[in-house]
Length: 449
Ligand SMILES: Cc1cc2nc3c(=O)[nH]c(=O)nc-3n(C[C@H](O)[C@H](O)[C@H](O)COP(=O)(O)OP(=O)(O)OC[C@H]3O[C@@H](n4cnc5c(N)ncnc54)[C@H](O)[C@@H]3O)c2cc1C
Image 1 (cartoon, helix red, strand yellow):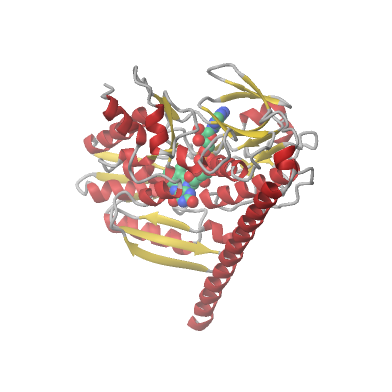
Image 2 (image 1 turned 90 degrees about the vertical axis):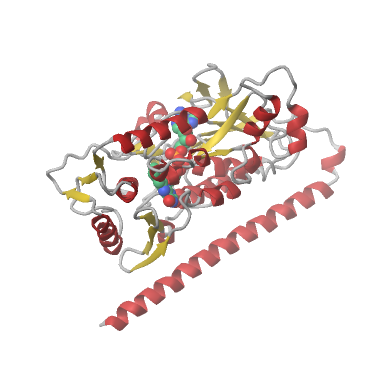
């Protein structure tokens, strides 16, 4: 009987490789076709001799610049021809205002390179890296690594193709968005809604504040509360709860740590092998686990779909997610220019995560790029089971990586050496040097208090 199971696992690995290979070949084909388009654009006589249209007079507004929105903005902005009339306007509240005194820092930025062209002279924007929040809620000294400077990832875009707005959208109409702080109304030709979802708006799932300094402080306060508590009760046996409870018990073995979960099994949305491994890891560390229907569930996913709910209430599912077509256009036929991606969208993805969010962002970007050429959006998002891969830490030096297609599962146990987990990789992926923050350097240079 062992043989079929082994064979099934081997087939699962082969299928996973097949899907990843075809995904990578799709990306390569896309990149080659983009380069060819750019070359043909440069060679075309119209690109040099005919009068240019009013530059960047039409907006593609992206609301939210996390895994989905940031990737969609990058893909669209770096694919726009240099003389396109379109500009990507990213609206994201995460960041920090800086009071840069008398000296003009612009030459410094230009010398440094990656941040030039974004006009961020008195404020800095930071990507909040969710994956490490449970760990940094317990372990000190790495908080700054959860705040990745935004600039470099978009630096490949043509000049003027990106406008970054540090604000929050409070209203969406059929053709414009309205900002919270400035009150500005920005007209859009296309809109990408990537406002995400969260079990809570606070640690350990989300930073809960927009500023970097405030975020670092929130993490330190959480570490202090855990350090000072005699007994710790963690609500919710999803990934964030399991990781935080395991880390807390590993760091403070003398404390009583209890994990409370409303379902019968922790990690209930994943396969049985991961559930067993999580339970084994928790009990092995000495975490007390309380599960089942005697626990009231108060931590369901809350999609940030209010903006669309006000514009098109019929496009909101009972779960609060935004209903979309397979092209990721909103289901409302009267709003074909609104696309939705990431955790806020109802896409039938079993366990939404960064991979599914970025895959959806690619589909949205490609469809908008088709639409800019006057063509119908034809790219479709179909959830891929390989996107459900998850790495779950079980204490400070152990993790399990799980992959399953609903019937067969693979589980790899790993020793972890890096307390900061994948932060360095994430910085590099976003084009930043781990863990160099140009704004910190600038402040030191200018001796800003
Ligand atoms: C603790 C934790 C650990 C995780 N670990 C992993 C992991 O290891 N691997 C993995 O693949 N996935 C992981 N995930 C899941 C992953 O973080 C999410 O699936 C992913 O972040 C979804 O991306 P998103 O862009 O859809 O939404 P979000 O990341 O939620 O981002 C939404 C963005 O929209 C912005 N926004 C919201 N409303 C507005 C508005 N009105 N105006 C302007 N901007 C707005 C927010 O500021 C935010 O930046 C983890 C999640 C958590 C909570």
